[in-house]
Amino acid sequence: MKKLSTALLVAAALFSGAAAAESIGMTPKLDAVPPPAESASFKPDPNLVALGKRVFFDPRLSEPQGTSCAACHDPGRAFAPTLAGEALRIGVPAGSRPGHVAPRNAPSLLYLRYIPHRYFFQDDDASFPSPFGGFFVDGRADTLAERIRGPLFSPDEMGNPSQRALQRKVAGTDLGQALTKQFGADAVHDPERLIGALGKALEAYFQSDEMAPFTSRFDDFLRKRTPLSPAEMRGLALFRNPDKGNCASCHLMMESSSRPERSLFTDFGYDAIAVPRNPLLPANKDAKHFDVGLCQTAHKLKWPEPDQWCGYFRTSGLRNVAVRQTFMHNGVFRTLRDTVAFYATRSTDPAQWYPGTKGTPLRFNDVPAKYQGNVNVNAVPMNRRPGTTPALTEDEIDDIVAFLRTLTDARYVGLMPDAAADKARSAHAPKAAAKTAATERPATNTR
Image (cartoon, rainbow, N blue to C red; front, side):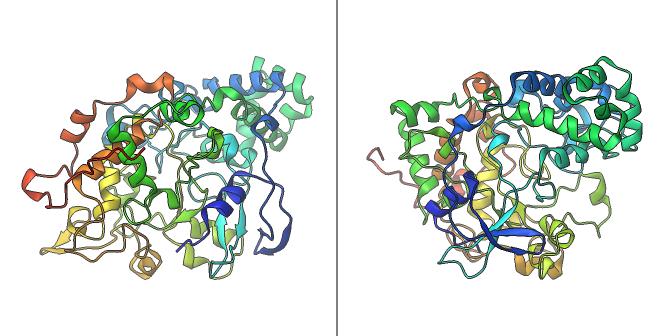
């Protein structure tokens, strides 16, 4: 799987500006590590930021009206979904029309400004180039203007039937007047230009400092070395340890840097980890339906051998992950602890995660059989055989969860569930007898 070094990945994923020596299909392949882009480079026009914020909260942009961008990206929950009723039962946000829910979980929009355009990059140690960047978990959008098309015109999200229908809806409103003032009359008379104007306004808002607060306890640890608790420090060490959690190999962070924007907890790359199927998603009532992720984008962009990317999804950032109600791209997990435990025991105890048939676990039940060879079975901790000892003990899983809770921005700390209660409601909470003899914690503080 991915073998790019941490240093090169940080530079390539966080920063833009490198020249493309060639292209893979319709996607550039970078030939050098891009130079750093300072956070100060994000200086959007304040008027455009204000307009973008107005667009974000406008409930008239859906069909029927009443569903704004904020409906699925709640500012009160780190711009991630606040789910209720049927949406909470299923695990993904509700759409604008009754009975419709989004086909995937919605990400937090905080720190969105750091997501790069799509590109390929190959480290000297890598056997093949790997894709990075792009919006959505399948990378299908390369710009904000492309990104907003998804929810605006999805029948299961904001429900607009066409660009022309949206243009007619906006043209005669106060929002249309504001867009005209900012972008000219064509912005509301031409449907395509309207999408571009909405995208530019939202991009300015997402690039504002409001959307990148960096106010977590971990940020205090980076900037001022404010101590974390012993459990949190153990969790940080496990998170980074390539023989234990190995989380930082994809969820990149730079503990040595006082600049928090260098610890976004993602490399913006893609991996196939075979998240269990969410049987509650409406589309999954069809046993032949699979969300295959990146390979759909690969076909569209004419990447060679596109099916090799089936089952791949972009690595999500982990900031504010502890306030989410559901986890993974399909909303299948309901606790953060289950999510961490899945990585630790997916390979050693597959029956815990994948439904069995006559006692035999069905591996990777949300990946078509012909693509299951794409699934990552090489990286720690997912590289162990069934029945062997997991790379992480139950107490170590708890420590990683404790560390992940430190990534919560100050505004949202009160939304984190009590850690003990969260563990108690975990669908895969361990029984005391199931703990291995290897659960002894280190006596020394890892600081």
